[in-house]
Image (cartoon, each protein chain N blue to C red):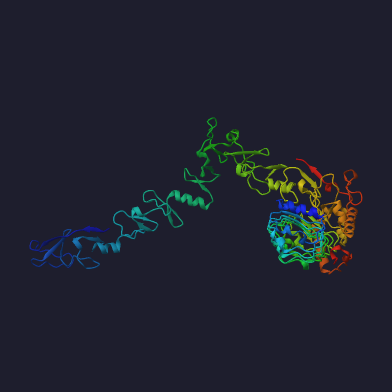
Amino acid sequence: MARISTTNQYTSRIANGMVCHVCREGFDRDEPILNSQGEAYHDDCLVCAQCFRPFPEGTYYEFEGRKYCEYDFQVLYAPCCAKCKEFIVGRVIKAMNTSWHPDHFQCELCGRVLSDIGFMRNQGRALCHPCNERVKAEAAGKYICYRCKAIIDDKPLKYKNEPYHPYHFNCSNPECGRELDSDAREIREELYCLRCHDKMGIPICGACRRPVEDRVVTALGKHWHVEHFVCAKCEKPFLGTKHFEKKGLAYCELHYHQLFGNIDFVSGEVIEDICVTALNKTWKPENFVCWCCETPLDERSKFLEMDMLPVCKKCYERFPGELRRRLTRHYESAQRIRPLAAESSVAQISAEEHEFHAACFPRICRP
Amino acid sequence: MAAKVHKVIQDAQNGKRDVDLVERTITSFNEIPQILSMVHITRLNLAHNRLKSVPPAIGDLVNLESLNLYNNQIEELPTSLSGLQRLRILKLGLNRLWTLPRGFGAFPVLEILDLTYNNLNERGLPGNFFMIQTLRALYLGDNDFEVLPADIGNLQALQVLVLRDNDLTSLPREIGRLKQLRELHIEGNRLQVLPPEVGQLDIIGPRQLFRLEDNPWISPIIEQLQIDTTHLMDLLKSSNYMSMYSRHLQSGPAIPPMVRDKNRKVSRRKD
């Protein structure tokens, strides 16, 4: 160990017969004698073993019988802090194969001073216990309990978006109070066991199967989150607008009509009122007109079909004869391949030329 | 008769937006020059007249939504026609068109285009014809197409496609891209096989239609047709048909001859 000493100076007149502790020679008259810990020294013999200069203010450090000035002693023997790189005087923390000032030995992740609380070595880093647990849990894909900071080995219970060991909580229903498991549910910032939760009658969303706590939409015999009640075709939420139900599914107005029919062939618009069904298409009554002269037609009008379009008898008779004959021939070929359905459902529209499949015959539907 | 025409024009001048001049023996727009300055009209019906041409000034009727020129004797259309920004319905059936003007596909909102019974074929279409993205129904029956251009697949809104009584010897596989198609009419052509992609189309059902009579189909197609079109669609979807189809194309089949004399068509007349 180093020993810090100071020297006293006095003159040899008083100390006769003394010898220098270094050179073993006597002192001249009036020569200054240095005294250190009972030993006498010549002025130029009491010097630093490293730099051979006198000690500033007479202070030196002794180590293994040799004396050093403060600077050289520190250079040679004092520990150096791994964090600040300064010499350490006083308490030294030896850890992680190096030395530290007590205040400089910190957790590498959170910066807590580790000197008095102990530490864990993790992949060459000194970590506090909580950080070490967290790092281990992250590596194993597990959660850390927000309350006890330990790894959650089983399923965590999420409460206010933080994971917990379920056993830290009890059911909020005063008549139950049982310790919770991960199936517990949060309702208005309180936790309930699944059984109590279900008994409280909170609606479950038909889409996401989670409780609906804000606005509830009730449709199709189910409850829904407002944002989860969407058109089965475009998946846009109705957000309170009109929807149409068909076979247990809900559709927006546009897609309901697109899928199940009532789009006017001429305008492409949705038919909200009276709808004419004819020629495999739907029509607004005012747009169900002869394709050529655009005279209005109704269920009593005589018209003929060309390319699944209605042509009034007058216009059809103006068509070139060879075109009319060709249309008739195609019609007969179609009939040879696919005969018309039973006679009762066949509507006789024009005696001379055509008959219609029941599906082609114009029908007027009033919603 | 002329008095009635005068009455219709007067009504239009007084603000009526619907102009109906069906069957008025009009031979030229020169007889009704006032019409071309009535910018407010939205519907113009000139079916069953004797018009031989349409003047470029038709492009000034910027509010026109529906133009019906059915059964005239029109041989040529002005390029200004496709500049009609609001035209949704254009009927040019039963005329004498051999070609369509340059840039005809530029209509911004055209939904229904009827070109039935003209003299059009694939060489008479302008380059941008299949760029009319809003087109819902295209009537090309009774024309002279031998090949349907593959660009037909660009018409993504198409619900009705009529190719009845043309001279088609094949259909492009791109027809399978028409996901909205509900009606397909290909009767009276020279088709022997269908591309397998037709099997993917939604054209069978009560609101759909698939007409394909009077073609020289290969016998497997005829056999399925005699049951019903659902069986035909099942055949088209089968891997068996896929190889049948490619074998047919590889064998370089003899192209069936034209079956009728088109020179008797009214649209061919020169008078």
